[in-house]
Length: 276
Image (cartoon, rainbow, N blue to C red; front, top):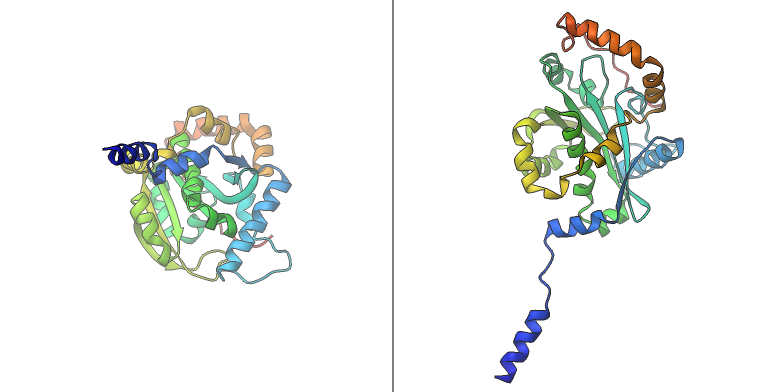
């Protein structure tokens, strides 16, 4: 009897193993999502991008040791760093697409698929340049989920209809399984990368509920989303333009809306992908 009681006491003191969701919730207490609004913040992200892509042989080596392109300066870009205990662990770039004159890597590479969605008044989020610190990614296997939380928050904040996932063929299973993404275009050349990239789409309107049920740690407060996205795009050019042209844009938008053509501009802008 004494042995059985001792065993029961020991078992009562054993804490159950944390689930994957528990680990992410715990790690979130050590995570900071930071808008890349300064030259120093963006510089750190560009170097992280370079290191990550070079390690996968997706780019060739360069003297600058930075991976930068023209999409970092457009008026619909949101660059973020994800920090764990103050150290840059990963980064993600987002482009919000409202009309065909805007720019994003996915729209440039897969215009034959995405232009019609924009012309049908769909709001599209294009997450891209998803990179991680190799050492921290090995230390924290939860890091991809912590990083993609940014995309989910953006979808909720902006009322997004479709999310692009531009990934290599070997990575598609992750997005199909975890985000219910479906393939729409086989791999093809992609700006600045040596390996072809395919296009998957997520119907966020249809699948938001089950995405959040599968990833409850992606839930967020309105205050958190406003802090990340409420000040608009992160590029200096975007913020300057927003401050000087806000009243003009409102007049133009109202004028176009009254004509019933806000969602269907005539044609897309020419390609811009290039190293700076």
